[in-house]
Image 1 (cartoon, rainbow over the protein chains, first blue to last red):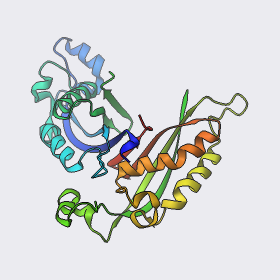
Image 2: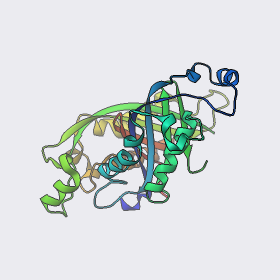
Image 3: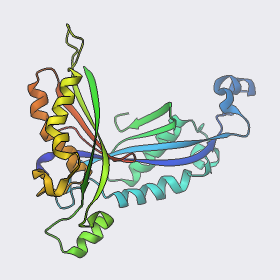
Length: 140
Length: 139
């Protein structure tokens, strides 16, 4: 199958975390108007699903694009250990950015881009609930 | 351009083993998947075709036709089979999820493209709800 060109490997992970949507650049009333119940002072949480697609040539010896165990190790170290059971607002990445799922998705994409060989990461999708999700890809 | 996806499921067994390697290396690289007695999955297959809706029918392809093509070319060969032992493409290639996606593409592309209505665009194979592979054709 070495003539087959590029294939993609996809994986889904679960992260449970809390956040509060609030920005110091808006007044209390404006925050409430912009973010509604997500502005609740004590925060709230989600079971986020993080889906990613990694592309590359299929290794002729293993039949794999990427070793699942290696990928799990990288994602575990860079993403799950960092964000699972965490308060996203307290992470330095969100010191001056609101931890919306858009921003979380972009942060995860950047963290993984740095950790994976160039060009491998096709997209990161973060599902905040079953009904809304966000996607970030190298193409922007 | 409209992309239309049809989903199907099949249940099959497989194992991962490279005949060119000693047993220890197979165990080391493939772990539990190297068990020669095999193991199985409920696979979910997604077939995406791309084309323009027909001005008369409004269809990119007839879904019943697509279902029949998938059944004839893929499911009849893979469902309730041992992929290593019963499918010719995995006599030589290891039936990883990536290689299954490529093999499904090769089985479907001639029949779908010959249908005249749409081109095969993407194959996605879910081995579990958390693990999947995708193929979009050769470069």
